Length: 287
Image (cartoon, rainbow, N blue to C red; front, top):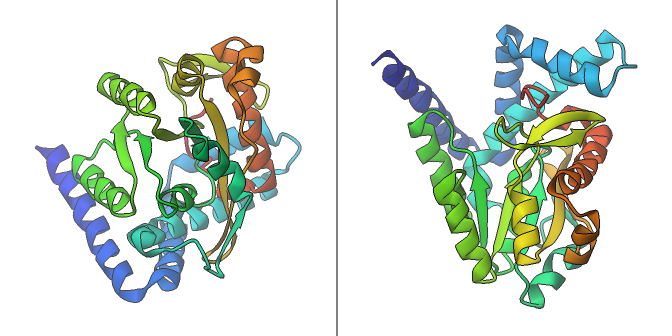
């Protein structure tokens, strides 16, 4: 009962913020989200976890530098929350605020009627990595982990469906839906930078971490190409979306096992994080 009331309160707070965000527009709602989360972050017990994670990745940075990264991360994360209500209205083509790099790396494999798997990380505004695909007329199924709050899950699902992606929830049923999609030569998108306790070991910044094996398993089973995609914030609500060269099946086959494939993919994420440490979510217990 208490949890239900708490979940409802969280939902209504976020829902009214989203309505307010719609009213004031993208730029102001992004800024407002950043300010709100900067204030809330002062009281968050996740700052200790963020410091611990930064110690693993940047052991040579001093505590002042690490705290600065955390402050910027919270502001950036708040901006993302403020941008969610506007995701369905952001047009990425011919948009002076969106710089798309190497779009051919995204579209060429699809033009060959291949089923591809796109991956990114919780960095920049990761939701925007799907926009060039959906706005080019292609279908993508986004694999997601459902929030514990079912009301917030409903809201997030609505936002994502509104901007054009199909959704597959992680789990056994979700795995079956992934297989159905790939059999129909449809594409999948997933974020692979979070811990999965019942996953398999891979290397991330030189340390063993537990990682969801789905991307490696599916790519090997269906002989899929894997396409790395990353969105970084340039300034304010200006973004760069970049698609790296596809990792073809024959390359994955040479790597051989799933653990090493995941470690290989993690290298991409490591580079993205090192370039923009304040845009990655250090508050997840990745290790």
